[in-house]
Image (cartoon, rainbow, N blue to C red; front, side, top):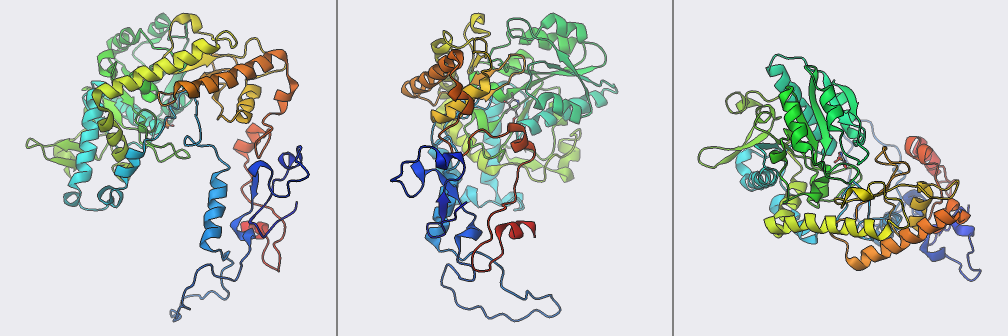
Length: 531
Ligand SMILES: *Cc1c(COP(=O)(O)O)cnc(C)c1O
């Protein structure tokens, strides 16, 4: 591998570099950059900025560093370019559509960012005394009011930090409610098509998981569910709209049956974007539901965080909500109920899940999004999201098999299978091909109930022209997979990396850079990494 120290990056290595690179091109081909570590950019022993020599007085008794640390001495432009080049190796919602089903990757409005950066919000510290943060408490309380109103529920626990964390919160409320009744129910029923977090959460909370089959139309099998209900069932976890992108029309009947058997209904609200402003889960008999603010309410998804997963609760579960808890007193004053005051205000809480109350940055953005849309605007969000998904479904169902295409309109995601692909061609080939077309792949192989599933969620923030481009790309890839175009097997061809071993890349990522020894006697990057 050659290292071009001067420019700060080296020509792309591997297949991308050797592939048809025109002889006239001397630098990086098509801006496929292979970025060095900052340690390899040189400048060791230098300082990138002008600073006076510090006057250091050794601190008595403390060990003193014998040599200067081997930090790269980079100028500001070198540093900025290094990180900007790194950022360009990734795909982002600000670059193009992110059609991941179930994830609701919608545009993050810049108005949200502007509000979140107001110093009164951005600089608030979680250890400030309550009396010094009335504005922050007001934001939390107003957002809580909106979430309770939109869902038709009694209360909301704002502190969980993500959808999966919200599931845990909901199940711990259910466990506390069952304990309070002096019962021991230890089974949670979960449909086959559920997101993996549902059974994982139930198991983590100490329940046994039993699966409920789906009907041929992709819905929960109500009779099979009823047959499983009994004195050992603590509750069900149901996603509505479900992970096949379909509304569960039997939700009320399911909830009634579960309640009659003494259980509770947890609803996975990750797909709330399809029904916000149209359907209130409280009217369907739901007892607890998490809301992923980073999905429905447009706060950024960032590498698994920072998220927020408030959990709305029914009257039956509200008394068990975790601390801290926002309430308004009789005069309308808002305060946080903490352990010290919980005895009077909230005595049955199951306890605390987090150190601090919430993700202020996410709350501010979500409330901004809600207020800038208003109730009518939120309803239109759901309608447009559903319209866009149906446009994708109907535009492609003559080339891709849509397993539930006959079950009527879909909700906000279009689901396809790999049926009809030529022998040896898979959903993975199509997903990798989408990278060459300039799109982030859709969700693949989920839900598990559909063979070679491709779950596309366009969201309401894509224009018709943008959807048409995506549809044209997916159509051409589907045609190639059906025609047996072997070049698809080696896609992506136009990305800095080709086919990675998906399992190894996820389970055994190589995080230590084993590069060449750096010039001029500096420690090599691998030595740096191993130290
Ligand atoms: C995203 C998602 C979750 C988990 O939410 P996180 O915020 O990622 O923890 C759970 N269920 C479904 C259906 C989801 O799409």
